[in-house]
Image (tube, rainbow, N blue to C red; front, side, top):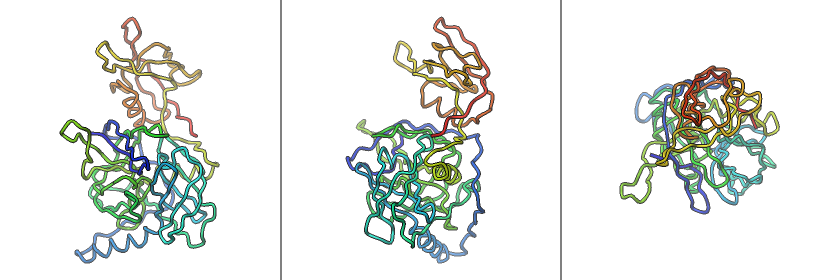
Length: 358
């Protein structure tokens, strides 16, 4: 199974990469403001009206973002004109065209900042209209499997499209593909949903029945097509970045002139490269260099050693190492297993540092 990002590349290319799922042990980041929880409708008519009400409330806050290479979605973050989207939608662009739900004319926007590790970016309208509708972000820590949700965005350029489904799982760790001008990212705490996620949905809104944005749709799963010729969409498996992560990172980008000062992410403090065995299979991460004064250096890790496990979890590739670290916290002390060029093995205890911001 693989995943594809859900922005529409104008060149028609969709990158595919391996997907690994695991339970996430790290806590969900805090967000300010209470979240309202919807009461279940008493009958089908009430449920239908709940859908209509949510669409009417939230869709005015969902925008279409266009660059010279891609088309995606965004959410109006505040009435000052800040819009949150995916970093892979923004790409390397610094200027954008934004179409609001109630206005067919595009409005120019400028990049505020991006944070690639969480695949998030903020852009700002150059001249925000007075009627701008900002979304209300809910508390993603309160989500439960089975909650009804809707995905809103611009899939395949179809402005203001809505799909519905449920929360299928929380706390997933997924690795999204690198592609174009984006290096990809490993996303902890991702929300899995059965709501259809299609190219162009990236950066849009995953919304509960209270009308609160509880995530940003980002990835959809792919599976082998069965004819040996590639992959096909895996129905009902999509992923979103939790709203608590969105509000934290977007808030930092806005407050600190496009920078993130607290990543909440663990790091070892090494540069690594995949090491393969004589058959070409990856066997671990070779330490190319050690950051002076960093966590690995303090534990005595040496260049030339190969990391084969972190926190008792085997790591054979960069994506596996990223997935393990994504589930750990800065300041946590974990065992790291190493082999040397002579074949010897040892385990050291490393107190993890914090991944630098942007």
